[in-house]
Structure formats: structure tokens, C-alpha cells
Image (tube, rainbow, N blue to C red; front, top):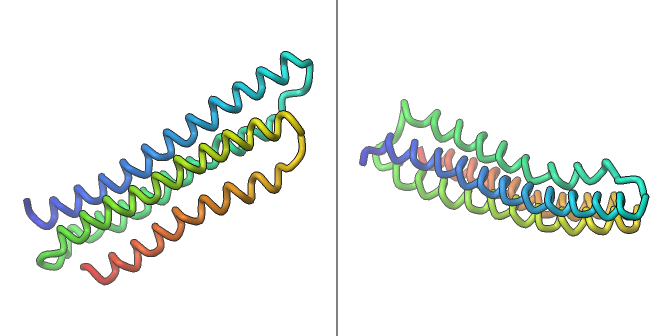
Length: 152
């Protein structure tokens, strides 16, 4: 496989893994939001629209994967000899870190949905906790960008 093909594969892997994590994360949080809303409706309580904040939080990791994908694809035209394997590895592991951040952010978002709907308190604290999990993805993206600058 040529260097260019490995770079493209790394870019696709990065976006795919980040997107898969976002899908899992939003899915977990969405299921919890629906359950929390059902409890609210059953108790004749207002269903908090704020829960969508927790559901949507893991989607940003797909954007981080996309940013890395575009940077990697930009290296295809002027690739350094032997850069294919390092970019492929960077794409896989950066995408994995970003995707796992999204998955676990969704798990935390699910708990936040339940807690917010039950108590109608703590929204800022829950959002701050999700932000800390998000930071893992931001770090992974930034450090991968730094590494990519050294590779090719």
C-alpha cells in the first residue's frame, strides 16, 4: 500500500472512530432523555427541554475527527516518503481517543438526564462534568495535530 493510500486510510479511520463514538454517546444519552421525559409525563411534571444539551454533547467529537481527517487528507499531495504508516497510526489512535471520549460523555450525559429530570437542579454542574470528558477529545485532536506537523 502506498503512503498516500495509508494516509487516506488513516483519515477515514479517524473520522469513522470519532463518528462511531459520537453515535454511541448520543444514543446512550438520547435513550436516557426519552426515559426521563417519560417519567416526567407520567408524574405530570414538565419535561425539561434542557436534556437535549446532554444528548447533543457527544456529537462535537465527530467534528474533531473531521478536522483531523481534512488535515491528513491535505498531506496526500505532498507526502514525505515513509509518512503513510505514522499518519495511519495517528489516525487510528486519535480517532479511538476521540471516539471513546464521545462514548463516555454520552454515558455521563445519560446520568445527567436522569438527575436533571428528577431534581430539576444541577444543570451547570452536569454540563461542567461533560465538558471535562470533552477535554480528552480536544487534547487528543490537538496533540495529533502537533504530531502530524512533525510527520509529513
